[in-house]
Length: 403
Image 1: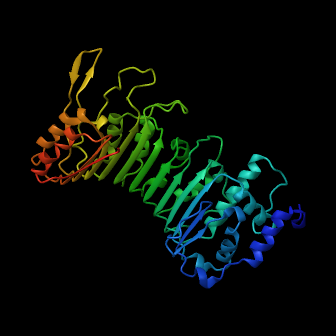
Image 2: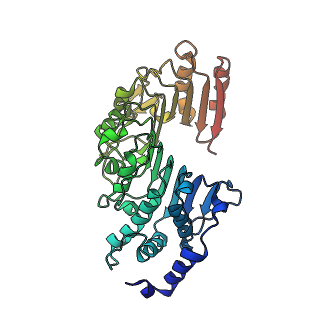
Image 3: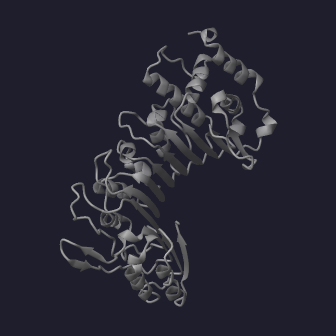
């Protein structure tokens, strides 16, 4: 379809965005961070951040074409944030670039692969303009935004990559994301999606050897998959793992607390920070058996470099009464002497025995522990009373509540 056959609305976009509204180069000389979003931003946003707040009007195009013409300006961009729900904006912008010859011409179809290709080509085009970018943060929905890649990116300085996606679709490809994961200096990887393994499995894990920080949010990973991933990160210093006890949508039971600790065996000499979060009222397996009820972490002493630990009280040794057994279970908690900072969430009155055990470990078993934060689901004066026990031992204690 020739350019003049485009709808009048799109023609207006073409003429306005490719000629009349090209931004003044002097106005964006200080461009350092590029945030592409369809959301309205506060006027107090940092002045050095060039915001394109109306992608619905395709105002992104003048800036992109300016960066395309001026490589010296493009090389100043160190951070890229794409905060965009799946809508027609990338389709419109991609169509304009295809029709004007900036991007390769597409088949004249309107099926899903063509639309996804339009969206992906826009992301692909943006990335190809920014060779010096160091941080990338994608918040996209769905994975169709990463349908294919026409470029092999050369981003030697890329050290931080964040990707969040609310849906999981195993039928869509993510070659663009895999290209970015090949960056030689990538140290910080955050994936927030229901099924990170579907993103990572096709990838050669050798690309992750430089990772020092790995953050997995709303993740559903089986124990073996998680262990393989952690073992593939020999330099890993920080792990954040947020999951639910059982993902009904994906039909898998992620690793339980003790299984996660087992998976960390290979990183016992490097891991310095561990953050675990579980979203469930109980820890039961698929059949609601009691085999995982009360599953907890007990012995972390082998993590000899661990300095910061953030966990919910439900996976630390508490006092449980298993009705079927009519037996009290109170396992011992063993923490590494290297621990400096401890944060415990979802603290309640039933956590008192565990907190008492913890206070008796200071300072002999925990000589370096100086800061404790307790986050309660609701205010509880009984729990707050334990603060003085730690303060007397030289430990700073902060107590907050969610209500």
